Structures are given as structure tokens and as C-alpha cells.
Amino acid sequence: MASPISAGQQILASIHQFDVAAFYWCLRRKHRQLLIQGSYWVSKSADGPLYALFGLALLVQGLNQFFLLLATGFIAERSLYYLLKNYFKRNRPPAALPDFQSVVQPSDQFSFPSGHTSAAFLMAAMLSSFYPVLAPILYVWAVMVGSSRVMLGVHFPTDIVAGASLGHGIAFLILSY
Image (cartoon, rainbow, N blue to C red; front, side, top):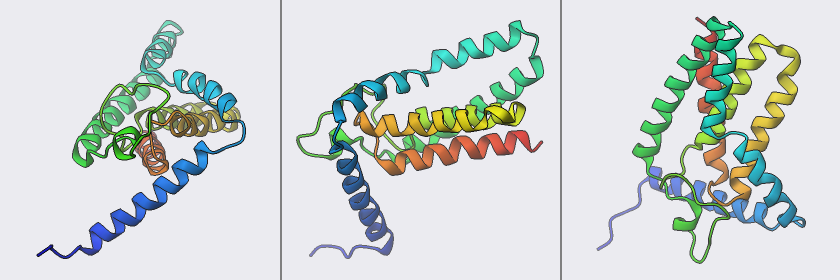
């Protein structure tokens, strides 16, 4: 006899169904090939080594206080990201959807939350607090990073929402002290 499905399992199943539908909707866009090419480069703009170079540039310019805030933010963000990813262990689209292959090979196995997105939103929020005039550009970039991860087939939409919330939430906490 099968065990009854709990309310929590039903909610997670509903979220997954929404995610799969939204994921496939994104992938059916008219100019998908052009979107994939752009998504690849936008996603690359949020790779880890570029943040390290940015931090080095801050140190060279003598912006030590800002560097320390960003470093603290990234240490907190990476730690929580790692804990959440390994707690939830949500499969990426290629492992969760039959006959689906992503455009790029992800660096790890699990998808929730999106690390590229959480780092991008952390950076957007932190930089916006010091350079408010750049906020619209920074947040458009962060949204594009998250969207690119869906278009490349390595994340579901809710992975992106969770990543954005994580990065922005940590920035808010760091900046409020």
C-alpha cells in the first residue's frame, strides 16, 4: 500500500510542475539560438574569477572598506549557497527532465539555488548601495544573469528566484550593519 502524500510534498510537486512549464516556455522562444548565444556571454560575466579580479581592483584603488564588505558578503553568500544546494539536492533540468540536454555543462550537480544569480544579485545590491546611479544597470545585469541560466538549461525559474533572494538578502544584512 502506497503511503499518502503529505501537503508539503503536494506543494513541492506543484512548484515543480510550474517550474517545468515555465522552463519549457522559455526554451520555446522564437529567437532561441540568438538568446542562447547572448545567454552564454551574460552567464560568463558572472563567473567567480571575475569577482576576484574586481576585488583586486578595489584593493589596488585603495577601497579597502568596500572590499571588506564585498568579501564578507561573498563569504556569507557562498557558504549559504553551498549549504542550501546540498540540503535541497534538487536535480538540474537535464537530470530531472527526460531527453533534455543543457547547452553548457554546469560546475556542480544540483540546481537550487542558482549560484550565478545569487552572486550577481549580491554584487548588484552592494555596488548599488555605493553607486546608486548604477543601480538600474546593475539590476538589469543581475536579472539577465538569472535568465541566462534558464536559457542555458541549467536552472529552473525558482532556482533563479531563490538565488536572487539569497544574494539580495545577504547584501541587505551586510549593508545594514
